[in-house]
Length: 239
Image (tube, one colour):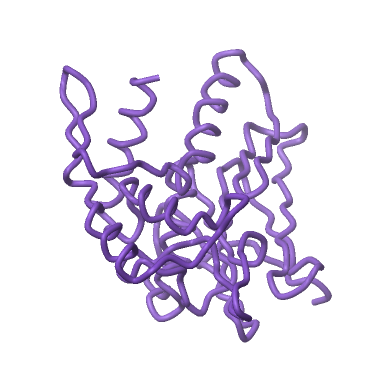
């Protein structure tokens, strides 16, 4: 629906204003060019990749009373925010229905809603991106959480593995050093957006995010080093 799309676009642009444009909804032409999550992924030519980069620019999206206007060359990709936004809508529906508590998982995005009987916190298992086991558990009050990583969705060509998360500065799959980023916060779209953004930025830009007042982060790099926000109740497996 147009109202939902307008809401997604306006919320995302507000986040871009605060955090930067490493994640953009206008990346549709680029993501479709690679087709990494499709049945026929491919490595595009440099010319096609550079042409797709020219179509980026969420600041070129126009929202007004008459609707949503996109430049002729622009395609939208809501993949970085859609699951989180859907969970926001479900949380509102649960609140309207008077539901006391619940858990809903869309795999990479999860809603932990309300107050459990006895007031106990939720316990979440975090997958180890470097293997098949569990990295550890996080104990948290009600929140939204989203995880971004390159370990589940990728393709290989000529011996090279290509992650599904694209670096919008190069138009190529990211080569950042983080293997998993999970963001815990009070808004689903925000958790989804930030997990992708932080994954793209890599560990060198992670430090300020670990001290944020309105969200918390758990991240792992390729060497297995764990980064954990102030106050996040994380227990490493086997510790």
